Length: 216
Image 1 (cartoon, helix red, strand yellow):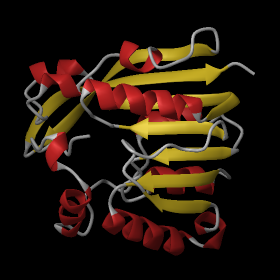
Image 2 (cartoon, one colour):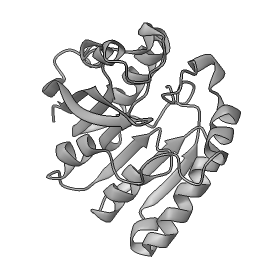
Image 3 (spheres, helix red, strand yellow):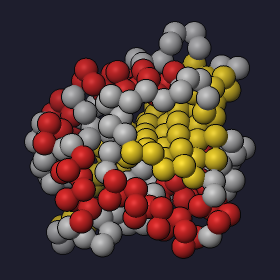
């Protein structure tokens, strides 16, 4: 994964992310990812796995809608901050979330068991990325859904601040290629654009959105 400031994956272990979160009272917006909202707001709540949960905005949004959420991140600072946000939201939200510190490139979720597995902006080199997506897909229960959102390679052409390593960016086949043949229906494989202002400069950003449902 990358932080949008040019750091490379091999530099970005637990201590990197702890220091990154300590550098500011809030790193991310505090709002759930717009693609997560668009793709899951009509789903019946069940068990969700939020991978790379950061400060917890996605997990809180899911829990507020009735999901039982396991939220995983490498940073203990981020998880402590997320748990504090959940406590502020009340027991009805906080009680539905389990916070788990893990390096997802080495951790395997229980399989299968989740009605929704969501991974937002996980940017790794191809081999660990393929292993991660295969493991996450295996964690989806029959009838459940797998949602991946990422910076698309087109962002490297627009000038938006991104890591300068092309191998960290990918298209939909990097996700769909991890799905067992004959077991999945791909519902969305799309590139969506939006305007984003970074350091007072407005860029067109391209987000890859892949959503698949495991056949019951």
